[in-house]
Every structure is written in C-alpha cells, then in structure tokens.
Image (tube, rainbow, N blue to C red; front, top):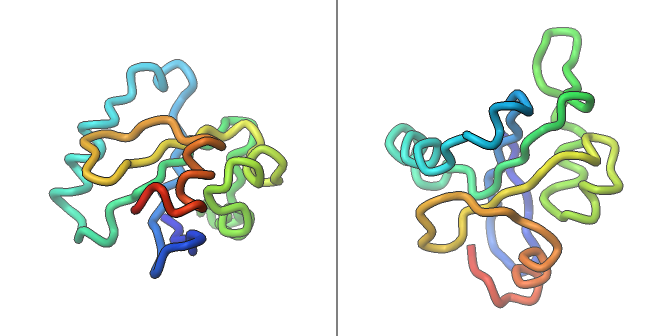
Length: 120
C-alpha cells in the first residue's frame, strides 16, 4: 500500500496496487474486498483507491517486493498513470465518500477531487 497527497485535501489517501489475473478481473468482488479491509484495518488504512497493475508492468525488486517508487510518483492522477512508467495500462478504482464499493476512477473523478467537489 502507498499513501498519496491529494490536491485540496489534508493528510494522505491510501492506495493499494494489486495484481489480479486478467481473466479474474471481471469477477473480482470489490464489495467483499472493501468489507474485508474495513473489518481488519483501522479506518485510515482502508484503501480509498485501488490500482489494478497490468501483468506486463508488474515490477518487482530483487526481493520480490513491489517497487513503489514509480507508483508514488504517479499517485492516482489518471494522466500521470497513463503516461507513467509504473504501468500505463493500469486501471484505477476509488471508494466514493460514504460509498459501499469501489468504482472506476478516471479523469472526470480526478477533476472533481482537485476542484474540491468530491471529498475523501
């Protein structure tokens, strides 16, 4: 998990970068994933953003840990992700305020957050 500074918001937002086999992504249970995290993690540690890492971009270091450097640089800005080195094919999701599941996150949602129209 990585935390990001989000424009117009105090503190940081948590993002989990996960790899799921492409054939399993359509059946991924976002609601169960959220419920599991809410039961086991403190509220501040529940990921507000999910980043599905593409299989050809899954970078690991010598110790098989995920290399978070590029993920931190790109954050959850869809434009930076699309043009970045960590995974231009990665897909972003987010948990809206008072939401019950993760939903697709793109440029429109990013602009709402930056403009202060969507709170985290």
